[in-house]
Length: 538
View 1 (tube, rainbow, N blue to C red):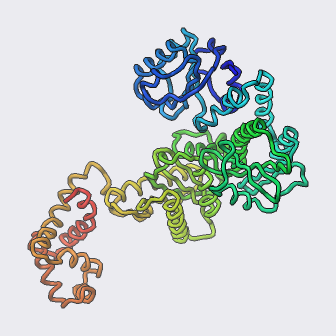
View 2 (view 1 turned 135 degrees about the vertical axis):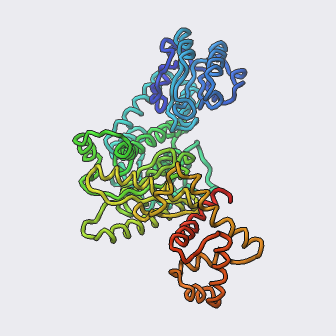
View 3 (view 1 turned 180 degrees about the vertical axis):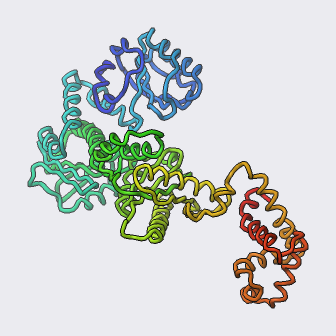
């Protein structure tokens, strides 16, 4: 069955598309559909073909964009849909002008759907139901509108029951929500169906649906998911009468619609969503904020800005490489925010921010101790989720009010950046504990630090290498032993005269006198800067 483009765009999820150019070409017919991902794919397209693409092959090349679009038009392609914000954020004016002049439709299609989900409604109409007419298309449009505009899952299961006249059951993992119609129809244990569904011996009858034998009857079972993340399950209880293939295909389209509805529903009920994340990032990064408006928005999102927070920051988490954002939001909410009673935010540069509320009943020392212990636990959660090791956190200090949140955030960034400059391994550092590293982080004195450290440490290292000695180890132990020869000797299981001899050797190598306090201070400072020296490859 041939279908007209503007009719196809009424079906979910294509109805989430945005027309960019070529509005007068919406009456073009669709005879087939396909995916365009290679620069020379236009050589193989067919007349009246509806094409979808991520735009990867021409993401940074406006001339190639124009060349491909022109070739597609010349070959009679119906329209081109581009997954928005995957690789192309905007088309060149030249492409848009060409499409408008030639009535060639270009659309941005929602990127969160797979190719199958985007094409399934057309597949159902054109091939699975080849004898269909416009009545079926109108029925599918009404079906998706009813589901997506429902107030709850109870309305949805009742609507599905009225379509197929067999019991329907939906279970959502989040908050353990269930809905059934008739209400008397309940399942004993959803895990039984999940186990059967995951059995590799059970075959799919469509891309999303399996038929499971259950107590001499049969169940049509499907995951409710977004991308690769499972939100829950939907099933139809067929009893003794199995649905016909056309009805099963219609049920498959219903599943696609419910998956979108469930994602919308979860985002509105969860305590951490893209809206919350965006608000928290704005709170930290926008220079001037209207505090009255800020408090109003925070109340709407149930974010308590009347509390005082200590901010912690980590960088370089592989968030941008992790495509399943729903899974990230769910993980952060359940495994971090709720579990440790904090707020979180992240961006696609790999920055992760923790807002830890202050317990005013604790002393400052106890507050910092509790914050660090909490960050250690959160760090382990992130390591397990992202399957990474050796990343770090900087922690700010305690300040009152909303302005204090931004101040604490800036301190956490400074703590992270300062300490990261000197150490390669993972760390959790408080801004108040930075000490000398806060000063040494100044880029303008980087060369001076290098020369200063070289002056004292490099001769000691060279001597240790040449003579297989332990001068550097002895020097470190000496300072760790509060500059006590005897304590150092005891720690290293040596005679105290051996320690004195080694320190005398260090004096000769570095041309200093450790009886002078200034020389001794410089030597200890140089020792603490060894990580900086190592970063320079010296």
